[in-house]
Amino acid sequence: MFSIIQAAGWPVWPLIFCSVAALALIIERLSSLRLAKVAPPRLLEEVVSVTRASLPSADVVNKLSDNSVLGTVLASGVRAVIAEPRITETALREVFESAGRAAVHRLERYLSPLGTIASAAPLLGLLGTVIGMIEIFGSQAPTGGGNPAALAHGISVALYNTAFGLMVAIPSLIAYRHFRGQVDSYTLDLEQACERLTPHLMRFSVPRTAA
Image (tube, rainbow, N blue to C red; front, side, top):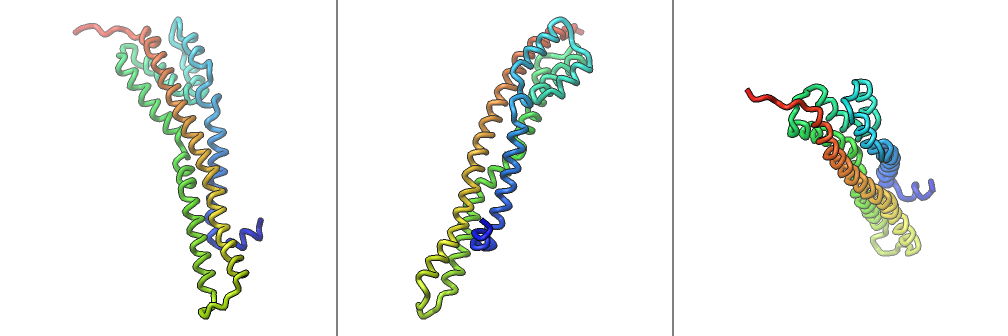
């Protein structure tokens, strides 16, 4: 492997850096986008059960916020009702929307760099191949007396860069599309959970009296 890297020349080093970065991003996203850390299946039912008779204490709300991404969003709505007993449904929905946007931004973290690597890696490989071809043909004798076997070997070496670029780009693109689909699915789950919890929390809102 090291001999192939040496043969590919200096243009392969940016691709190696991209491969290391892509691997680190994929591992980080696999850990951060787990179902248990984003949207535990029974969390909403537990929140509804705890708030069935009365609003929870601050300690319970803090534990809910630390539970997961969904817990953070739901906790923001519970805190809003506790802080403002006369909150309107529109205001509560705005609180959920603001918390939801922040949560989706957290879920999308590092996806843009991963997508950039998936797009740029083939171009870096092509660049390395073009540079290699220029060097190969530039080193040939002007009279045309070059060795065909050496020329063929040089071309194969130059194509290593293209192969490296595709080896980096294909897994990166697959991972990016997978994580993108996960984030879209989680976003829908967050929206549905907030829609279900909003009328439940409005039971604790004190109606505003007319002036």
